Image (cartoon, rainbow, N blue to C red; front, top):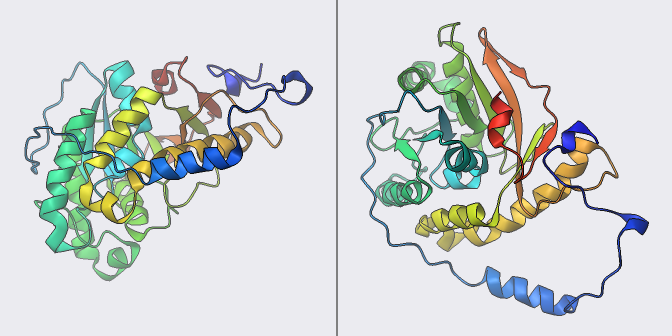
Length: 308
């Protein structure tokens, strides 16, 4: 068997697949999709501690992953790997809320919603500044280098305090200017860490698919339900765009793309209904080296094996 397919059964194709009659017609399926898409999710009633700039204390006996989120809700939208590490491997997950959005009038609301979302997922959370950073973009990096350096130093301080075994952040071309800016912020911070510092790096995608992902990680129905419930906490955002209800479709489409991105054109798809794509690498000796990994991680395989 292709080693990239370890931990994931492969669907049979062509003549090996027994033809079955569909249970319902295509119009009924579409009507069902539309009905579900238009049904709002209820945000859970959950008590959540107020967020602050104080870095959560970490248990030195447990590995920790640091998630650099450009906006509140990105901790959910790219959270498959962190959530599996928490639930399956007992890792600690600390979300860094890089910004609270571009509208200063909405930041108090978004901060409260983020606190609830992190409480649902079991993630810790830290703010780099009381209202998050502003202007985390390439243009701001060029136009205001001194202010940018201060932002980088703050992220360095958080990394030094947490000592993560892995850092999760957007990839360099994730379309949205704050997503791309968060990538630059994370990489600039890693560059001024001591050369003895090493960690895994997992690059994520949301607005723009990566050209070269090397890992596709499946997500169970239970974990997806948790991520959608956390997304529903971001009530102001899902009211204008149903990120929560559209999220499963995004993960379904990742399976379509990922099977051939990783295994080659015409390859059979692993039996995953939902998955997220990542590009894994290692930060070591002051630089990022992409991993030689090229594989699927289904529900039957330990996601912790990616870090062995």
